[in-house]
Each structure stands twice: as structure tokens, then as C-alpha cells.
Length: 338
Image (cartoon, rainbow, N blue to C red; front, side, top):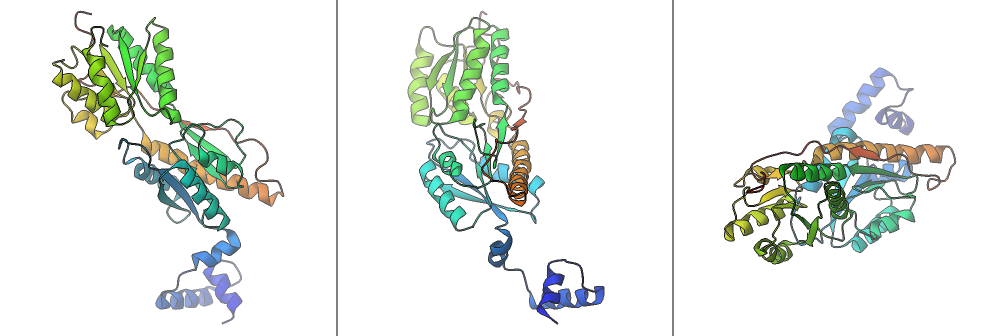
């Protein structure tokens, strides 16, 4: 058979009879033939996207986040449509160098950015590349048209936390915030503070990035005469530390101290008492990321087909994933005597 007939058959194109198509596919199967991904990428571009996880945080919170995100994304991408590869980098700068090199090498067709930092080097690198990108967790003003954004509406969730604690009667409320290098903890603390201002309550915020730092601030905070009657954390692991410190100081949860975990997880209902927590719908976030990735790739393809600059114009509207209602468990109650 001619090369053209075989090529048309294997690529599912018209112009080949059913009998010939069956023979070609049968022989290919007998020989164990598969298309060369590298060769195909020279013609149509790579059929893979990269999620580069930056592992520079001292606390192992949300450890399963990348895997759960990919699991959700694959539900909308489809395993045979696009491969989503996960890589780990030591810093945003290292990740930026990898993305720049991989784009030049045509290894990946798009990138997914999570855990957005303040002045993130990855976003700075992507601004100079005509690469489709999905930014998860933050909406960048003036982003290129090749970008899509997927944002978790945790601002609304933390506003719910503020209203919930105020309605219980708490007036001394503190937050053990996450890393100030990350955009998300800053947004969450601001939302909680804004909600409490409406009740005339001043939020006390302390930095608790990492177990050592969290423990260093918790003991003096809970030993003070004017100690808070409620503590909100940025994640589930820090909330567990709060329970431990409170127990060692002889404080009863929830009567002497109410605790709210900023991220729900299986650990939150395995503690004693179980932790009231903010939902963290990571698989829904993943599904939204998958759709955004498909949209980003489609946007670039359509602009190129029309002869337009892929970097031109403004980014399409961002997608927002709702968090849902606060999960109330045994770690919250009205303050003693309140």
C-alpha cells in the first residue's frame, strides 16, 4: 500500500475504503504500532500541558491538592484528549525557568499555575511567552488573552465564618494566617476582617506559616488575659495544632475556645472534637481548571487561524468556583458566659 493510504487510515481521514481501512488497522495492531508523539508534535504541537507545583512551603497542608486537582481536570479534559503532567519545582523562579525551556522545546502546549505567590516569577515568565495558561486561585489584572483564570470563592466563605462566629456571640476573634507570600491567605484574612468590621469586631491576625511558627504564636496568644474566644486558621493542619495547644493549656474546646479550620479535610472530622471547617471543593476546582484549559487552547488556536497575535487583547472572563456553606461540627459554640 502507498504511504498516503496508510497515513489516511491511521489518521482517520476520508478516501480509504472500509476493506482497506480494516486491513491497515489489523496489521498495525499485530505489529503493536502506535503513533510517535514527538513526530506528531512537530506538525500539530504537543498534546500535553504541565502543572508545575512549587514545593517551598514549610507546612505540608493540602498535600493531596495537586493530585485531586488533576483528577478533577481529567474529568473534563478527557484522558485521550490532553495529557496533564505534574512536575515539582523548589521555587517559583525554578518553575519559571522550566516553563520557559519547555515552551521553547515544544514539550508542552499549555501550563497550569497553582498556589500563586505575590510577585510570582511564573506569571512574569508566562507574560513573555505566547503560551496558553490557566491560573488557579487568583485573577491577574491585564492578563494576556492566552490566559484563563479559575478562582475559588473563599472570600465569601471566610465572610460566612465571620458572621457565624459573631452571631454565636464571640467578640475576641483571632486568625492564624497562612504564608504572606501566597495570594490566597491574604485574600482570606481580608475577607474575614471585613466581615467582622460590620459587627464592630477587630480581628487579631498572627502569622502561622509552618508548625514551629504556629506553635510559637499560639501559646502566648492563648495564655493572655484577653485571649481570643475563637480562632480561625488558614488550613486544617494548623487547626489541629490549635486543638493540641488548647488542651495542654487546660482550655476546653468549644466552651473556652472555638476553632474553625480554613480548609476542610478528612482530618477535620477525625479530631476530638471534630472541627468546624470551610469546604475546599478541590475536585470541582479541578473540573473548572480542565474546562479553562480547553478554552485557553481553543482561544489560541482560533486567534492563530485568524492570523491574530495570540498575546493580543484581554483575557476571557474568569471562572469562579463556589465554596458552599460552612461545615459546622463540634469545635464551635457560644463563648462561655456569653
